[in-house]
Image (cartoon, rainbow, N blue to C red; front, side, top):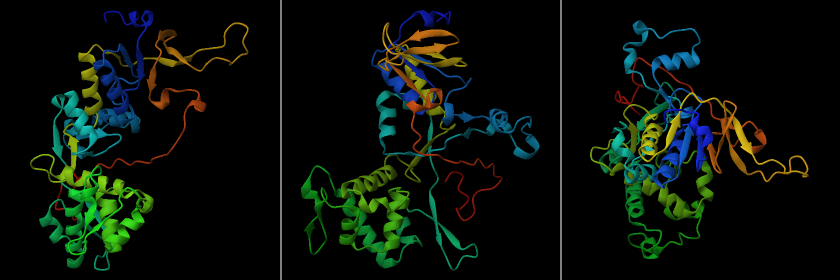
Length: 353
């Protein structure tokens, strides 16, 4: 578009505010579906809150007037710092979407070296011991996290999990000698683990380190959900050749993900504008003779630098919504960015973990 003001005179199928992962994914899919999409961001870079910043952008955002020094940080061009680091499960839905849409062709990935957990340990002077989460049967047999008896029981359990199919009750039969068909469609986690009679530490290891539950809520979750999470972990470990963990990471940072979907949208006619001065979202107002505020609440477009861009659909990062009654805070997260000059101790000098 030669003149950006031309956007103000056109009506779009959708306006997307913010270039975070979700926003770029949706604008990419809408563009592929033939919709006319205008995508805006107040920042001069892609990614929004989930951007990947170089070291200069990082210092500008957080360090005020302080500038990065090569003497203490080494080569400045080597830094790509994620604002919201998240690992990608190699067998997960996101990878399937990346492959299906062709977005994976715009990116490079590498497997994360490994993942570790730490447990309370009387033998360790720090009071805890870091141990690698097994990614193969050989790893599992060497792991200090479980006793030999529990290793055998866990091996039997994970082998059974790999054969279960949610839509085929015939695969719900468990046990080697005393076979029993488990009612996986009705039993909860508590009943499920009671049947398997694994040690509490084994259950915690499987649920927190593999199924990635953050609390004990798995005890009330459906058994089929627990199995699906375990299967995702197992499938991710074997999804690609050379996997050293179930996780993948974009080679140049997570900011590559939204940019890749932005490229997809652009290829299919999507229009992008960075450094956009977004004044707010416009809603249908009361008609003549109606009570003030009696509008339907339907969105009519977005105000940009005093001009209205019309669209019946607006998708946005919540920070673009000025009326807080239209947003709902569900959680708050505190993050710390640490620039280290050494690998984490007791992880065999893993570069990504």
